[in-house]
Length: 366
Image (cartoon, rainbow, N blue to C red; front, side, top):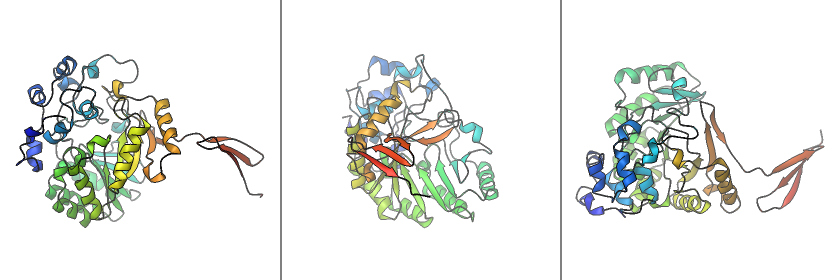
């Protein structure tokens, strides 16, 4: 493990202290890790490739010496991030800037919009898909941009859901979140709000009774957590997740398949079962987007499909996240499922189950 004594026990449960004391430089990281030559080299380029930041809490979960530690690979930069790439390397892989009608709004799907309320995260994951926006010094949404966003949502009555994202919305103060939620829920046709966050994973002490009561006040609010590995689920993160659920806030988890981190059926299954015990639904299992600096973390689609197929017959539906891919250049999200369908003839459809059992399904006679 890292060095938990660095957490200063009297301070470790103060989320604002965690944020202020975030690891940002080579010297900060050297207090927690015996860095490899490759890792040290990466710090010289981090401003060009993507900023580096980690809370003391999250850094303490990573191994001090093992460069293959899953959490360490997520938070410590590698020189591979700046090496020449053989395949895709996109700054904005989802083409969000093409679906950006007003500042801070991404409107790709008819009935929902993404509202980027901050560009700040308490940990900058090395595979971040929004490098075109995150950590670019835009901080909290300005009053002007927020009013433009609200006006856009108000004028589009087809919008039923607003997804708060960024950056990480839960890095905002309770008062700012309350203000944002109140204004959004004041729009008559907005039915629910989703909040995408990694805070329960990387800074769980941020989740307080006061925070969850604010979210509950503006119900329905759905929380989209982001855990990638069983090692990220600690006593503190478990308490944070259960605090949401106990206050009637549904929590659904989105993970990203990452090479040599969680790219096995066992790793996915173990994470899913741990989440379910906390009443959190494993929701998405995403392909890593082809964002600049991530080729070394990408899992081939064939391997991802084999992981899903292996899980299919050995994991309950509750524990099965949906394997999904965001089509690069703005094609949207698509689900990928094992192909059990073998074809059809004269209204009879042929199937083979996960364990080889064959069967037919016949259409009704018209």
